[in-house]
Length: 100
Length: 383
Image 1 (cartoon, each protein chain N blue to C red):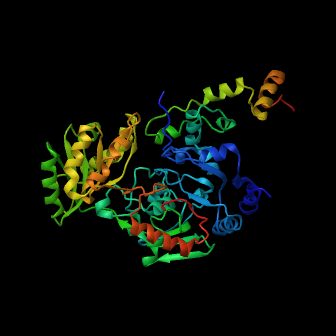
Image 2: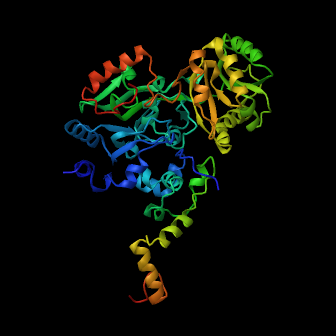
Image 3: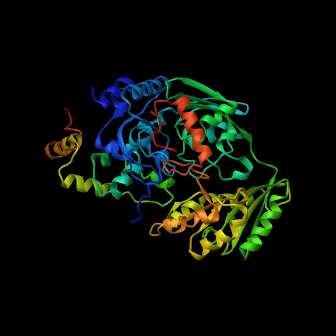
């Protein structure tokens, strides 16, 4: 796995960063947390589009899904995601049953 | 009221934070050195920046202005509130040879907006670097010998100084902000000079077996009035970007003296632009920016080769950038700088490295006393 070197060149490619304009939402922040061995809810704040790799000189793989997997295993799940899982279980559809 | 609550009254509920996550993220920059961030504010206009400075004065809590954080340790707080100017990103106008922009505008976005003109100071981090950050560090661009520093391309800079005053600096006063790394004021807006795109330039790629031969040629080129850029690439750098394992000079000429024109010349410079990243892929991730006295250059380059340290840079200005592999301790090389008379900070600014000479430090102190007597901006930087 190529590690993020935290250069920040990814910022302006990332649609999530561009929407909020905060470093914390940038791919670099996620890379930094991975380097620190930390998982945080911020890993849910990603469209998984992979746009950051277009400008990443090192083609760093941020492994967002793996980070999310760890978060789920440790019980850190967004309430909206929980609701969708419950909807699937109860109604077979992430956005509630037809007619609701 | 906590500091975060005070900040929120100025910039709004969602534009201030003292969460552990935000403080962690804003405690560092591309240098990966770690500082301590008290809180973060994301102002979106000049008035908010003014109010932040007034709050800093009342509470004696320093502010650390921050652009993209792509610098080499220029945005590391030590108990400061990080003021991220990314939301100050309006391009007000592009008129003739002047662009009027806010400090958070990204260089790449500026390049697109000013076409067919060009902003001549181009840095490798152009996809992220902000105009405010580039002014604060007074950066050198890639074609540094031809275009000089950021300060050379400023018409006017608007700052909120440490007294909370909004000042439009012009002429000689631009030296009170360019390269001062936010110590005199938070840069909020700038009028930038634009240039016509290059069309009468030709380029030659020269290769050398020895540093002595390279130095001889360098002396000759410096005396040639048509030469406008001289960039050095050592054997390792040259090899990595496909020029072959020799020391090289990329030389630009005003007019047609050079062997390469148009696309061919552009290919050479684009390869150079990619070099830091190509080196980075091989784990060369730290660099120094050095002024090397002319007579010392061949000896210093020889030392770098002996230590297997790749090196490149605008050698025509006496500036080179040695690049260190992640497992190399640069202190080993740095201990030799004084014997060569080498000075640090040639390109990226100084950050919190206390490396200013006595005269410059005195000048910074005088400016600080005038613009920021309460020392609430970029505390601990430069001096």
